[in-house]
Image (cartoon, rainbow, N blue to C red; front, side, top):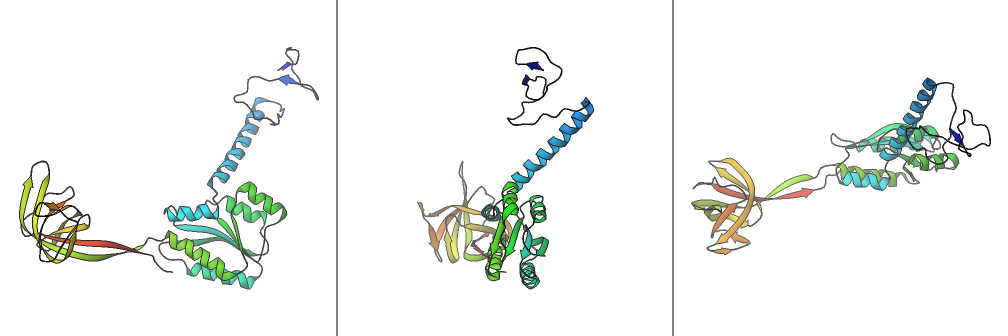
Length: 282
């Protein structure tokens, strides 16, 4: 340490200023320097402080707002939602818990990590801050005073409601976003391969007759041989004589080329279909 005159000093007394060198990193302005008896105690204090700051930073970085939670649901980044439930009466609390748990299924779930009657406490905030992506749901209660300030400090998301139905419906909508859609197939057409043409640097074009429905360019298709599906892909090119067309109806001839697949034989059948995505219901 050196004082304001540039002289080396061993002790720093109240109201004195000094330049300290030898620290392993630059401390932020306003940091408190603590004097201890020896290096071992200093290292222990430094480790404890570093651990506390790291945990605090991780707690803030992993918390999300309700809107961010909805976005994560939409992006399929979550499959369950941890919640703390607080209500004004035991009757309301039980009604909310039972209604939320009824929404759970084998694919998505609401995980109640704590519930209770009364206002939101600092203990509730601690539970949520240590649980990634958790939120607090409150019925007929509001965070106030120190709890409200702590919630901002911990970046804890609190949602409060005055109508149980509104709480349940919002969580239902959130869970529906977590669930994979039901995928149904709509068969659109079939075409039988009558002849094949191997075009150098292009691929195999199958001369076909549409036997059912409509064959469209760009649609998904299965190649079936003797009743067995041997390839599933997409129709890359569809021609009527030499012209490119968007679709060909039943009874007409056409030329079909699959995307990146050429092992087509006379007698094979193309079966085309659409995938229809439907929302699941709870």
